[in-house]
Length: 587
Image 1 (cartoon, rainbow, N blue to C red):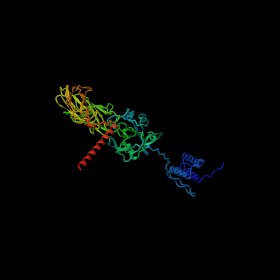
Image 2 (image 1 turned 60 degrees about the horizontal axis):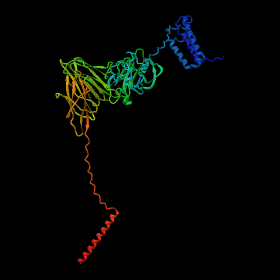
Image 3 (image 1 turned 45 degrees about the vertical axis):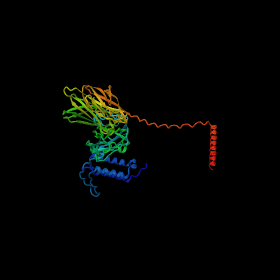
Image 4 (image 1 turned 135 degrees about the horizontal axis):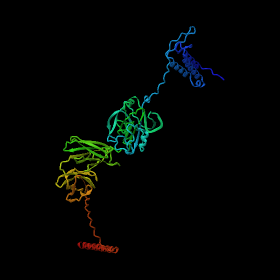
């Protein structure tokens, strides 16, 4: 068998191991200067080192530099202090007592936080608000323009999970290019959406087509998640997260719907991060559960954006300094029981604003809400006013309001209540006016005593306009409408009056119409309709027919012409002869 010569670096490694065994042992331990156990251990170590160094595989794979480095590391670990080697001419002196050898303990793996907490931000787009699972808290702090779909399946404190999101929002699709902002606090609202005070890190992640799906320790699962991006938090944001102060916002502080990138395509639907899936606004906190180094945030947008308007519900009381709560209910409220309360304190008015989707010119139904009048009170007036005149409203004596909201408009509905008076027996009359065939007015109304009941002017066909509400004593009354005077363009005619859905029998006189109304304690709603009759175009003056010329006498055709010609010749000849005779006589 052919032996290969030992390389110099292998011989050097063996000599270094022998030197360590010889010099790095306590003095007087045994005949060879080491305790039996230490000697055996050192011999075994040296033998193992030599054996490993000379194995063919080790020789072929290890470089001289690596071997020297290993030898140096072994020496540094095994010998805190080394006694110099004695000269050959003098007997060796006993080495000074050495510090006991302590092998260095390998360092523990660094916790995941050392290289940054991880955060995956995912964005989804949905066609309907009801496609989106709601957060735990369903209330009027919710910033979506319409109420959401199913109740949350998360218990309070459950971490947001990608599989749960996918299973409970199946009709939503990944949204690529959606920007988020990491923040250190909550700032003001922009366009009705919460924004953050940006983190000093300035990080604004943008969702990608897909990224690796991570587990709660930030390790790859082997799957991917679409419409998402994962960021490793730097020191600034990791500190915020550790102190439970890291806030996540959809969009940017000045552009929460990313209109710079997408225009007005999207509206806010929902946002839930980590374990903070309580309130549903455009900012959520990324709080890491104990033991987690990776969490998710899921953002939901809705397309098309229906546009937004504002409805203000205001409560006033008449001639009272009372403190009273007035309850309301209807589609305008997102609470589980679809209700809200306005509190009058010492007679001072109270109001609440609702930012909601536009309903005009789209498929969404008009918003509606009704007052639940408390005992001892009654409703005396209800009026809804559109600031821009673009929304359509209807009010009823039952306390119900309907608002067909236009984008960008603000509608204020004011409910006025009064305390019941002892022995009082009154009811409300709510008049509404609509026209067909045209618009205009004013149409003025009075009662049987000539009391002014208000007037109305229409601005859109077949769209009722509210007239001022009035209190009446219970029983039979008469309402009279004065029609606007006729003009050259046309005139108005009465069509019908319907009270609580029943057509009243009307009496028409010159320029006015009267109809009976039975006032009840619950009040009466009457809708009066008129039609515009355009004046006919004036009849044009007829053009006189010219008098025809009399016909020439019939000459009898060609023969008659001949006779006339001959006659003319005879006459001409006779005249010439007569003239000639007269000239001769004269001469």
